[in-house]
Image 1 (cartoon, helix red, strand yellow):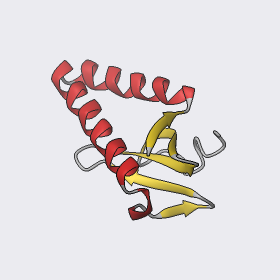
Image 2 (tube, one colour):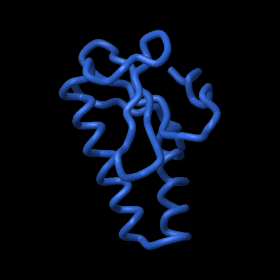
Image 3 (spheres, rainbow, N blue to C red):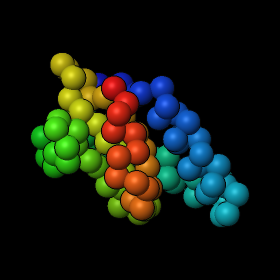
Image 4 (cartoon, rainbow, N blue to C red):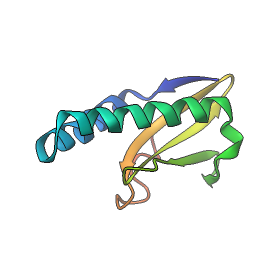
Length: 97
């Protein structure tokens, strides 16, 4: 399944990467993005392997970083709704369609 990103996901990613560049290095920001892309590909290959958190929204935890993303299956694609920190309010981004 091909990934489709909600427009705000790009802002989510930019903020996270800017943070890692500011407090650490550009390389760490790149590592974050590479891991995110790897898990997006995995979610596209086998979306049913990720647990449903609310209605039809599934959650994917990154391994190295304290972030996760939420997605739903729409036809032959997965729609990435939000990328957020584990400690972010649980409803943040769930109203995105």
